[in-house]
Image 1: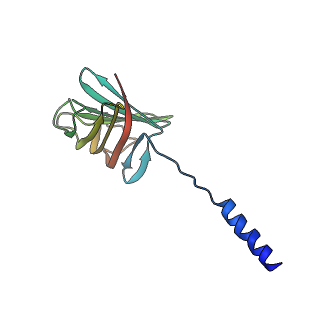
Image 2 (image 1 turned 30 degrees about the vertical axis):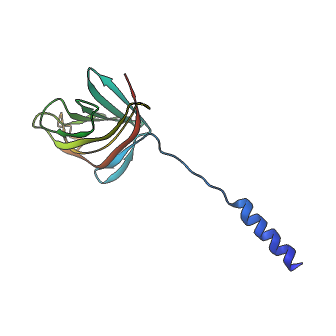
Image 3 (image 1 turned 60 degrees about the vertical axis):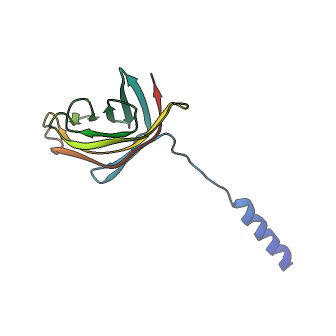
Length: 155
């Protein structure tokens, strides 16, 4: 009787084991003001040679723009060609943070542009300024440890 009981326990142990694997592909996430942030949807678009990568949540939109899809580092705050725009829309209104010529700082690093699968992968970090000095938010927005992984690119 003891052996049968042991076999039943072992059988249930093997039956109850399962693998719950969840892939985050594509991914667009980072730390926004030291709090984990993840887009629920992400896409990239080629417009006139520029690459625009967008990540969305329910009420947020983060847009990264570079002059090319070529792997490399694109610095922010030095011009208007490589920029970041973050927009938060809620019941109180819209808050916009941005980088531009002499505004904010940071970088977007493209590590891979997969031409065959038409995806883009890389990292980003930046400090963006409260564009309209909206009193509902602080003067700056900080993103750290940001990365985008295999975001689909459309033309």
